[in-house]
Each structure stands twice: as structure tokens, then as C-alpha cells.
Length: 211
Ligand SMILES: Nc1nc2c(ncn2[C@@H]2O[C@H](COP(=O)(O)OP(=O)(O)OP(=O)(O)O)[C@@H](O)[C@H]2O)c(=O)[nH]1
Ligand SMILES: [Mg+2]
Image 1 (cartoon, helix red, strand yellow):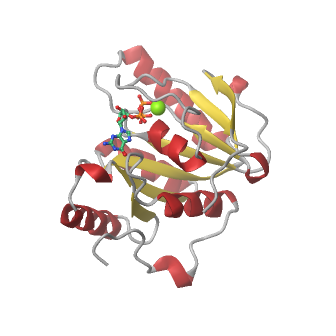
Image 2 (tube, rainbow, N blue to C red):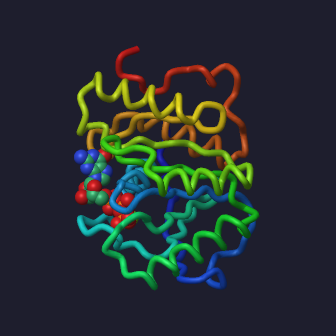
């Protein structure tokens, strides 16, 4: 599936007043600090240096907005759950994220990026509850699949799917070896187009390494 060659950085927002105009369609990438959001975003858009990646967790404290051309926009949300972030920073994060999820009309859904070695943390569930309350589409991108062997990948995917059945889709992904890249692009476009996962593919095993 095609990448997003027209993807480009719009702006970084520290507060809601700085968000770009709330029109069209927007998809947000969220996840624990250091989960691999920015790397996933770069792989999915096919633009290696679009979003900054880092070895220092908790570095992205702003919402970074990107244009995906005719498809809409993508918002890279600041990572959560990093213990060393000072308290006032955490409060700012909570405020910014709450305002974003609750007021952003163009938000069509969320890609929740989770490290395959520790999926569905407490913070992930808080995020999932928020988006469920707002009836947003959720796709779980279980990344760093390259850190697991194939049977571990299959077990993890099955476990995540069974715990989120009925309200989220899930897949294995790796920004390193590009596992699941086409599926990730397909789900990104599907959510931006406000299309529910169709019955033909709802039960389909996406990037399940053992099937
Ligand atoms: N092995 C492996 N490492 C990855 C993968 N994706 C990201 N990483 C590494 O994980 C670290 C964090 O990646 P980022 O993409 O910066 O993570 P992030 O979620 O954007 O982090 P923050 O913005 O700081 O919250 C970096 O060292 C990446 O190289 C992957 O698929 N496989
Ligand atoms: Mg990041």
C-alpha cells in the first residue's frame, strides 16, 4: 500500500489555542512514552525523519500536527507513563490531552501504540476509556514486534484482541523490520475516512504470524 509522500509537519502545540483549524479529518497517535509512536508514524508515512524519535523517554511534550494531504491530518500525542517526568509536566499533559480528546471535532479515531513486551498498561486503559466515552475508532498498534519471536507475537496479539474485543482492532507492527506496515496504513486511512471495520475483515487475522 502507498505511503504518504505528501505528509508534512504543520506545527507543535503546547496549548489548545495553538491547535490547527478543527476541520476535515484527524487521526491521533497515542501511547506510553518510548512505546515507538514517532517511529511508527515515520514508517507509516514513509518519511523517515518526519517525527523526531529519541532514546530519551518523555521527550515529546507537545502535540505535533502533520498534514497527510487530501487524507487529513495526523496528531502525534505526547507519550504518557514516564515516571521521571516532573509533576507539573504530568498535570500539563493530562490537561492538554483531555482538552484535545474532548474538544477536537475533526478527531476520527486513535492509533494506540504499545510496546509488544508490555501491552495494555494502566495508562493505555485510561486512554481507551476516554476514547470509548467519545465513541472514537481505536486501532491498537502493537509495535517492536521484532523483539518477540513468532509464537510470542501470536500469543500477545491473541491476548490483546481478546481483552479489547468489540471496541478495537489490533495488529502486530515493527518500525524496524516493517511487519504489518500495509495493515497499519490501511487502518490509518480507514479511520480517517470514518469507516468502521467491515464485517468481511472484522474477524480477519491481521498480520498474525502463525496463520
Ligand atoms: N526494536 C525496535 N525498536 C523500536 C521500534 N520502534 C521504535 N523503536 C525504538 O524505541 C525508542 C523510542 O522510539 P520513539 O519512536 O521515539 O518512541 P515515542 O513513543 O515516540 O517516544 P516519546 O515521543 O519520547 O514518548 C527508540 O530508541 C526507537 O529506535 C521497533 O519497531 N522496533
Ligand atoms: Mg515521539
